Amino acid sequence: MIQDWQANASATLVGSLPHRERRAAVDTVLRNIGDIPAWPQLSVYPAEQMMIQYLEGLPGLRNENGRITIEADTPEFDNELYAFYEEYLEIEAQTKDIDHSRFRMGPETAETFLLFLEALKSGGRPLRAVKGQVVGPFTLLAGLKDRNDRSVLYDERFQDIVPKHLAMKALWQIRRLSALGCPVIVFLDEPALAGFGSSAFISVSRELIQQLLEETIAVIHQADALAGIHVCANTDWLLAFHSSVDIINFDAYNYFDKFNLYRDDFHRFMEEGRIVAWGMVPTGEASLIEAETAAGLEDRWLRQVQDLVSPEVPLQKILSQSLFTPSCGCGSLSEAAALKVVELTRDLGTLMQNRLRG
Image (cartoon, rainbow, N blue to C red; front, top):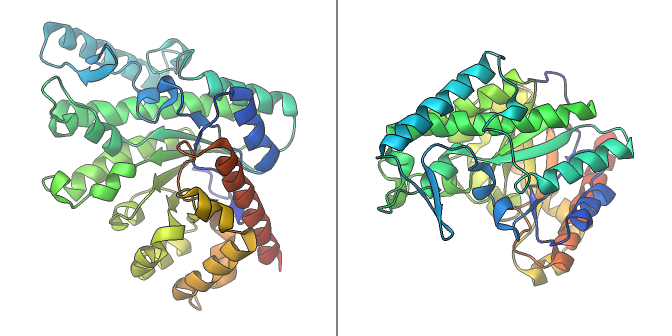
């Protein structure tokens, strides 16, 4: 982990954009998010959708006429599983190059990522950090199903496979992004955690989720990168506070009051020097996005954060350990609405940095 990195109220993005033209998407990010740019996932392309983008190399994966399933009850699966663990152990032992492994992102899934990387390399500007992202292990497990439409979340084999697989996907990104010579942040996108504790996941234990997260986070830390977690709705935030994650990112525009219920845990998190990325810019209805201003969002945050301020954790400390982001990705918006979200995020970050400097 990068021990001395400071957030300092900077702006960054969650991930997805709606653009069809890759260069336009990259330009939108780099033109507006100068300190901590994030590579854009273009969900209009099937290969860049949040789950699909990280499936390459997973044992048992089948794609039949666009229907993606896991087939784990065949002799072929045993061979695939052996090859998976063999490569994983070789990379862990540093006897195999991850760029020549099943864990690399391929020409389709990495096309926008590589364009973003090349643009940053040729730009030559200093960065405070650069951000990547992978789908979180719980969300991937919850979303993947076998041929009988059963979730692989309840298959103990995949409870072990998936966090290892995603840790390697994160490591591949970190190795590439580290070439920029600045700190690297990788977020685990975990929208499915919003359902934790509901009837859909009634038999899923807190311990299982912690185990899935910790195995993935550990590899990110071993690669000297910062690990974040993004949940785009409310969840049991103890799952994040009690993990080793460095950054918690949540929809602060809609769920600030729910997050405030964890005041003591938030204080401990701040006292440990960790970071909250406040998703203060709405990404829902276009009319709501259009009506907001950066100054209005600043006022909204300052008003709501007062419930978390204390003598031990004053406002300036919170600001210094804060990032500001959209509430969620922008992949479902129009390009015009997404641009407004990016610009609001940029301007809100500027206002907050000015406030931090006093």
